[in-house]
Length: 362
Image (tube, rainbow, N blue to C red; front, top):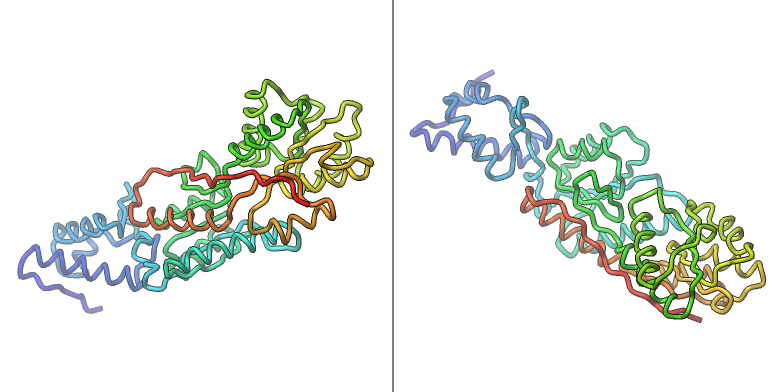
């Protein structure tokens, strides 16, 4: 193989020319994100320059955020060279295979919000279904499509580690795991639950129940924390018999059990679609009038309120509901990804989308 040699009129020109050569390979994808560059010795031999010239060229790429130094491994190519303004996609990595039901509708809404936010910047969005696929397979797809950033709703630690190895800017959306140290954009569950309790307490309720998952995610725990804080501010607490930490699939049975107790709640928090609908149905089954015999506070994105959420309550209409904007969540996620691309060393932040109360509707 013929060795490619760069002009060496001066050391300065030599390292600049080598840096430009390597940069063009990064921009073209000839050196892929996550790939380790040859050592300075190997670069010097291949391009006919001194080790010092090769070292200065690599340092220039490092200063521009195109490569990162890894102790004992060398310099690894970063995804910064994959530029969305050059038509390369942002990847939306989803956690589970799509299927029928409200969760699938929610994901469609979230995807539409992200597509709209990306399109407003002139960016394209590529959807990748991670599901139970091996991490190496997902990482290879991200690498082959030359993704310039990633938005993900999955909290798989091994996938996060692989993404970091590629130097791929990433933001979690509607998902958050504190120990991952990654930017995340979520609904403000604490604020929403606190406001929900304040609403019920202001209407004279003292026995307020909780129906929904607490321990299966950070978001559930945060909503419960907001509810506890709201009750404490009102001089109240959740009685053990009125607390149902249940998966959304088991919400109806848990609601039936709660409302069958002699000392049933006069109001209840159902801060998920399934939870609010289960409380409403269980109340109707027992001959209760929702809104009179049992006040409910639900939870819904604005974009699903009329088409998906309202039909859950039939002619009674939705109860008081905490609502939030998926479009705002999408814009915040894309904006943070842009900031992360511009400044890779920014400290991770948790961005919360505000939640507001919508009164009961007929």
